[in-house]
Each structure stands twice: as structure tokens, then as C-alpha cells.
Image (tube, rainbow, N blue to C red; front, top):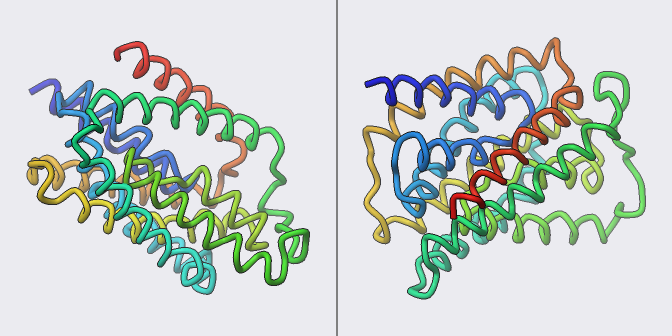
Length: 259
């Protein structure tokens, strides 16, 4: 009983992370499902896609009403990301891809994510006072190729290791899409929801998931994401990213050490 209560309390933190910084949901969800709830790694990755995808969709709603969702960018980025997520999930089902290899890959991705978060947290401008430049080295035709290309790569990563990729999507939207940080956070949530859905579909038939646990975790995390989205009115994401990055790095080291 204590484990169930603890797991669901921590699940609220998954939502807060998604709502506040637009990412970090799966980075928290997979270790939580594996090491607290005792779920197998491959099943945990599949379940995290269902949980984080649904929670991201819920979290995108308040961002939508705050005007922080860029539909044009969603249309450019999402279709190829959804295809990539499905392909990544099917790749994970190949016989030579073991649970251990998949979890080690997840840990490596966590290390990369943590470094990016730490660096971005120290360098990115205050989104309340400045926006990303609308024109730059990636503007024009190159921009329209670069955004879908990264979408495909992030999608494959999502399907294979279950990471939503907000830590990669947001910099792409800011640097390539030329949109402000807060808008990038809201937009990334809608993208994460779509590609997580196709990634989860790719796992169906490969693993047996616990639908009750998916439902209860989704409810807890959805509550958290509404809290996180509300807190964006008062807290700048950049002020939290460095600290969250160090936390993710610690979890990554734990995951890799356990293997």
C-alpha cells in the first residue's frame, strides 16, 4: 500500500515537470514505474508513453488558453515525429533488443538530456522579456527541412526508449521555429501527446500493460500538469532547468548503475 501511495505522489511530479518546463515526463515516469512500482523495463517504457502522452494533452489545454500553442509549428513537426515514434517502438520489439539494452539506452539518453538541461538553464534568455529571433541561420527553406528532420529523429527516440523528447523539441522550436520559450513549452506538449500515442500503438501486441496502473498514474500526473501549467505564470522555466538537469543526471547514474 505504501508503495502505491508513494508512486502516485511521485506521479504528480511527472505532471508538474511537463506542465512547467514542457518535458521531463518520461524521464521521471520510466524509473518510477521500474524501481518503485516494479514494472518490467520494456512494459514501463510502453506505459510511460500512454501516461505521458495523455498528460501532455491535458497540460496543453491551459497553455492553449494562455495563447502558448503554435499550431503552424505543430503541423510541421508532428506528422514525421509520429511516424518516427511508431518506427522506434517497432524497433524496440525486435528479438535482439533486450530489456537491459533498452534500459541502458534510456539511461544514456537521460545523461544527454541532463547535460542539455543544465546548459540551457544557464544560457537561455528570459522568455517573459524576450523571444527567439524570427530570422536566423535556419530561417527560410532550411528551417522547413530542419524542423521535420529533427521531428523524425526525436520520434524514433520516443518510440525506442520512451522519452518524450521535450528537452530536444523545445530548443528546436526556439532556435529553428523562432518562437518564444513559453510558446515552445505549450507547443511541445501537443507534439509529445501526438507522438507518444503512435509510439504506444507500436508497442501494442508486444507487451502486456497494466491498464489500471496507467489510468491511476495518468490521473495523478494530469493533476500535476495543471499545477505546472499554472505555475508558468509565476516561474520561468529557465530558472528550474539547471536544477532539474542535475536531478535527472543523478537518476541516470542510478539507472545505469542498476544495470
